[in-house]
Length: 439
Picture 1: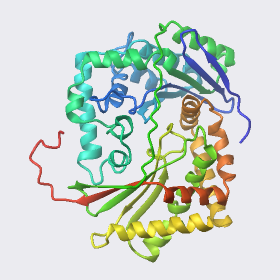
Picture 2 (picture 1 turned 120 degrees about the vertical axis):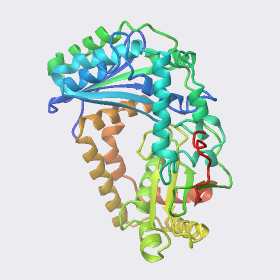
Picture 3 (picture 1 turned 180 degrees about the vertical axis):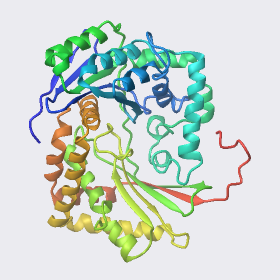
Picture 4 (picture 1 turned 120 degrees about the horizontal axis):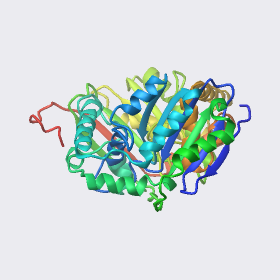
């Protein structure tokens, strides 16, 4: 990966700025990362961080509802937002000539989104429908990212349902929204990333001046102290079963804790390669053993990170193995086979060729993702916000390639020596009363 320029600045109101010019890119991306995710939402208001992300698209100080959309799309751009464990992002990618328009749009809603009772009630309904579609009325909805954490973790931030509980979403008030905005959307709790074509903006100095012009007058507010979400690793296995009226076959997820990438990046990346060795591709160990050799499962996967992507959360985070299996297969038989494969890796490690193959798959996927300005910008912004090192986004392919068989062996041993969570999903007849899904 060629060297990349990174320019950092902090405005007087506390807003952090990351500028990453790329003259070879014909477009420009603007992202605002806010240091609040669903782990930070208040107890009794599950799903509020995601709900608030929706509210940020409902108009702002200077623009009526849908105007933001029209301005971006009218410029030939795309936009979106997303809520994660530890951050929320808002972003758009447009032609370079529309850079100042994008900065105005993002600054206007960071300054004062349009928080009204009508917008709140409307977006509560939108989020509830999203939950029905993505969780309640589909097979394996919320599996495993909603259902597994309450088994593995004990504290509300780590264990609760980040998509939201219907009754708690319905109780959300305008006062809740205003308090959430005032607390977490302070300029000092946010970061602006601009990446791509800086020519129309006058280079790095010109783009920084535009950011100061549009964001600099947002009033400074106290920046919330980021709490630690650390909690002890379970010492034993924890197990829970949940019914699923839509699942055609039983399934299970196994969850383990992974190392903190801030303090043990090598250990974290060893777990990332372990996940690939176990589940990535037809030659992966669990694919060969459970699908092709023993015929115990119809599908199996492994992931280092609850939300699936590498380096997307602070500590604690979760290593998962998921499988779907026929009803006549005892899940403990499948778990036993998984344990045997982990024990084998803990004793012998992967082969050099096996690790090289998985490293190459990682590198190809990372480079393919970086082909798009949007993903490149979001990766830079998230790593800067979470770890203070946007450079990690560019170092990751080389860091992955440098992972040794010993690191993977140690990761497998760490999983086998600690407690874990086992979530069993059991097909069940849908005998709920009408309306009962609105829980």
